[in-house]
Length: 241
Image 1 (cartoon, helix red, strand yellow):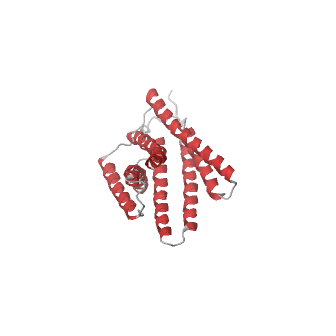
Image 2 (cartoon, one colour):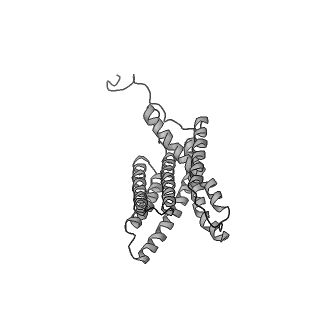
Image 3 (cartoon, one colour):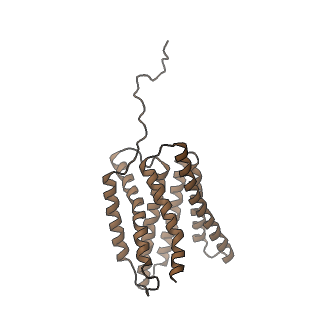
């Protein structure tokens, strides 16, 4: 006798949508990269030439990485307005959104620094945007932790802890110098733990055959490259000097 409560006539559930690097996304990424490079050139301030071509190289490396994150935000808004497949749906998608958000904030702060060089007072706005960026990033991390399952949740917990500590340092900048030094050391350790965890999780997924879409793996490569870039920049400046 068949179960009267069975749902035999209902259609089977659709598998999760797998994102891929389409031609449209690549063209959008190219356009966003060009726009950010133009913004970078327009907001560049003259230097004494001590660093040589390092600032230009930094721009050509960082801008395409940030543009990937901004492209993810455009995709998110497009899916929201068109009621398309869910995005973000995998851990890497959240990494791209976080990278894009922080990248836009850094460009906004760069513009404020340029304005301050002209003699206008913008320190209050600068601090406000900085604090708002950290607080908003913390909210994004919290949502990612809530929606992500398994060991990837640990990665976002590390990122949230680093962001929360940075927010605390921004709000309480008048704390004792030794306290701020220790906080900076802890932040550095958290950043290294984040990068190593990202590498370990990617290797674990590959070994276990976990199915991830192309956009997820692109995010792992881009965020990993961005972390390497942030690590290498101080050493490059030190070598040039």
